[in-house]
Length: 231
Image 1 (cartoon, rainbow, N blue to C red):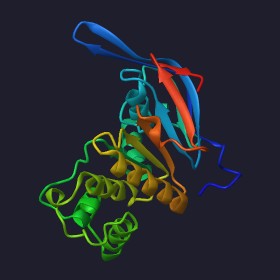
Image 2: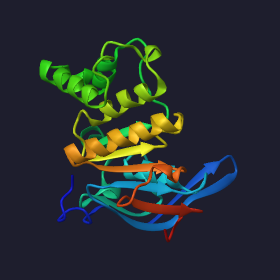
Image 3: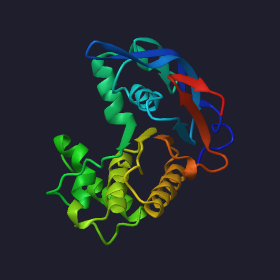
C-alpha cells in the first residue's frame, strides 16, 4: 500500500481539459475545462450522474482518447503530448483496464484469458505461473481451467481483474466494473481490488454512479455537466 510519502502525491494532474463529441449535427460537450488531481497509490472514485463526463475523463486518462484542449500528466509525464505510438506503449505497459463488459474469450480457460494480452510476444512458463497466482489471489484457484460460460458474473469479472493486473500496471482504470453484478459480487470485487492495490501499490481509478462501495479514506471526485463539483 502507498506509504505516507506517496499517499497524497498526485499520480494524475488534469488541467483545463475540454472534450467535445459530435453526434450527427449535434455537438456534445463532455468535459468543459475540467481541472483535478488524483493521488498516487489510492483507490479513487469518479462519480456523477449519467452523461456527466465520467467515462470520457477515464478514457482520456488511459490514453484511449485525446482532449480537444488542456493538459493531462500521469506520473509527471505529459500524456497529452504523447505521439500515437507513445500512447500505445503507455497503455500496453503501464495501464490495466477493467470494463463493465468483461471482454473474455469464450473458447479459452480462465488462465488463458488472463494471458491473452501477452499472446503476441509468447507465453513463458513464468508468466503462466504469475497468471495462476493472480487468479488464486482473487479466489479462483479451483476455476483455472473453466471457460467463461462456466463462471458466474463475479468470477468472470475477477478473471478480467487478474488480466488487467498481470503486467503489474502502475495505473488501473475501471469503467463501472461492477455495473452488471449483484451487490454481493460487487462488494467482493472491490475487496479484491483493495487487496491487490495494497499488495502491488497500483493507483486504481474507478468510474461509477454507485457510491455504496466507497469507504473512508478513498478519494472521490464528483463530476457534473463536464466540470468538477466539490465533494
